[in-house]
Length: 451
Image (cartoon, rainbow, N blue to C red):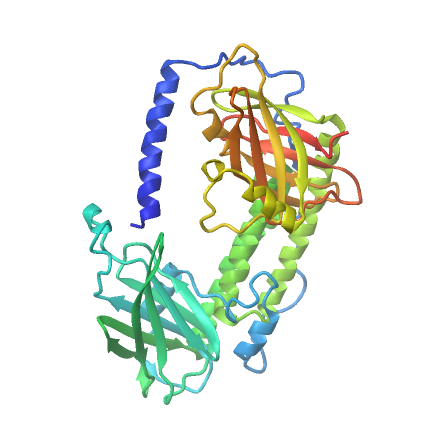
C-alpha cells in the first residue's frame, strides 16, 4: 500500500463521519421540487438514432514483412510519441501470456517478449511496515531495440511483468531490467538484473535478490493470440460504436466513454503488434469515426442547451445551493502560471500526477439563500466539482478544480477550474459550461462566453 492509498482511506473515513453528522442536522432546507429552469432527464440526453459507426473496410492479414520497433515509434499517436515505441500489456494479461507460453527453442522470428520479475527485496521496512504493507510497488524499466520500455506493477506485490512487441532475440545481448520501488515521494532504486537468451525459452537471470525470467511468443502461437485479442477488442469497440450519445450528465457530454474505450482498445492491440501494424491503424480509424459521430450528437446538445442557458445557474451540492457564474478564462501560459502562483498554497489542490492546466477558468459560487450559512463541507464539495467545456462544433474538454477560496464572510467561494486542453470558444459559435456536482445533484449549464 502506498502512502497515498493510506491517506485516501483515512480521508474517506473522515468524510463518512462528517456526512453522517450532516444527516442529523440539515444545514439547508432543500426544495424537492425542481425549478422551472432545471433540465429534465429527457432534455439532457441526445440519443443517436443513426446506425452504428462501422469499422473501415479492410482485412486483418499480418504484415507481409515483419515490422521493426522504429516503424512503430514513428507511427505512434502524437499523445504517446516519445514514450517508448509501443505500450506494454496490462499486468493481468501479461501474467496470463507468460503462464501460457510453453517452453521451446529460441527462433530468429520477431515476437512478443514477456518478462517476469520477482524480488525478495523489502525496501519499505519503516513507515509502511507499521501498517503491514512492506511489500514493494514495482516499476520496471528496460531498453529494447534502443527504446526505453516502462511497466508499472501492482501495489504491494513482489512480482511484476514487462512486455515488448516486435522483438528479435539476440543470444549475445542480455535483456536487462532495472527495478524500482515507487512511493508517494519518489522511487527507491533496487538495482538491475540481466537475463541472456540461450537456446530455449524461458531464460533466466538472478541478481541482488531479483529473479528475472523471460519468454518469447512468436509464430503460430503468437498469431493465434493476436487473433483472439483483435476479436475481444472489436467486441468492446463495437458496443461503444452502437451506442454513441451525448448527455450533460456525463464527462465531456459522453465523449469520455468513447475516448476510454478507444484508448484501451488501441493500446491493447499496439502492445501486441506495435503502432505501425495495419490492423491497429484500422481500429484507430474506426475510433476517429466514433469521435466524429460524438461531435455530431454533442452539437445538438450544445445548440439546445445554449438556447436556454444564461450567464448564471443554480448549482446544488448535497448541502447547499449556489448561484454559479463564470468570470474569466485564460489560456496564456504565463498568465495561467501567474494566477496559480498568486493563490495561497492552502487553497490549492495537490498537483500530484497532474499537469499544469493549459487554460484556467475562474468561477464564483454565491449562496443562493441569503439567510443560510454554508455548511462545513461546503468548500470541500465545491472542490469536487467537475466542469465540461463544450463548444458549438461539438468538441469537448473536461476540467477539474485546481483551487478554492472562500470569502471572509463565507457567503461566496472562488473556484479555479483548469483543463489541459485549449478551450477557446470555437469560431462556429458560442459554448456552454456544464457544472457537475457530486451525485446525486443535477448538472447545471451556463452560457459561455456570457451574453
